[in-house]
View 1 (cartoon, rainbow, N blue to C red):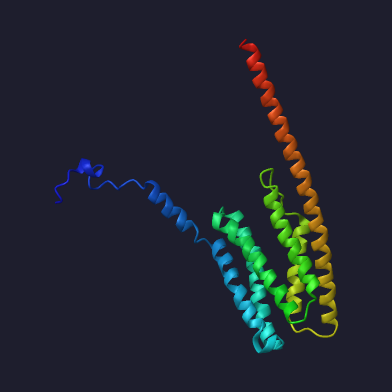
View 2 (spheres, rainbow, N blue to C red):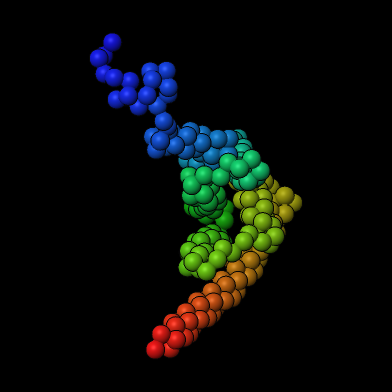
Length: 233
């Protein structure tokens, strides 16, 4: 009834319009709302919630610290499941690649800094762990054009030890359990340093191999160019 011929609208009125770029964009946008990304977003939201709970009543109330521990524990559990779900069910997105490591570092940094501010954890422990995490992240970007440094078993043990230790420090533990958490944190610090040095070694080796491969490729290209020039004479 519009007076516009069917051919002008791309065919008959019953034929759906091609999806094109707009349709593809809609599909990609919808794919962001998968279970893995939702868990990552929950972890991001839990970071300020954890800090608020921890600092209630001056930060030393056992009941509030138990609630803070619960928030921290849920955040660490989502860290385990979101990556597994993303890889298993092909739910990897650009958002997840960026947000997941940010959420991981944010909840751990929030716990360490808060505990040091409250006087429960020495600042040097927080400094060592955070410096290692930031340094390794920057180093990954430094060598990314040569390859990706995979997560090692030691790195996973380090993450587990850090999460366990921080969780134990969040709780108002006394007696033998307070002593135990000190040893767990000591193990976490040792693993943090050792795995950090191993990542540095891997990065140096990876960069050397990458640079060597680039030089070899340039030499081969130069030789091929020289040979082609000689044949054309």
